[in-house]
Image (cartoon, rainbow, N blue to C red; front, side, top):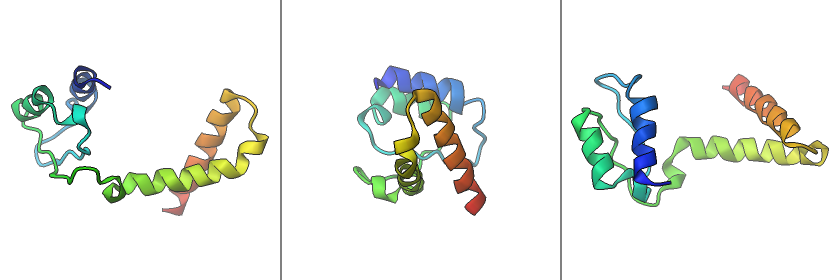
Length: 100
């Protein structure tokens, strides 16, 4: 992804929902920390959580993705189309959210 694309995503999807007091979390992918993206976040008063570089293991969603992937892998022999894969992903995601 290019930083311009990332900035566009932030502007269109984060900004409308961001409120003072929120802390935005992102890893340190190159396109996250470019000067233009950093400037955009500062100019829009977005507080960004300080995050160590190369630390996907610290990101809580990574554990969820792993659990979801394991559940999908168990069902893969029965998946023969992208449409069915989408259904399986949604079904397994719903099962995950019920556990919490």
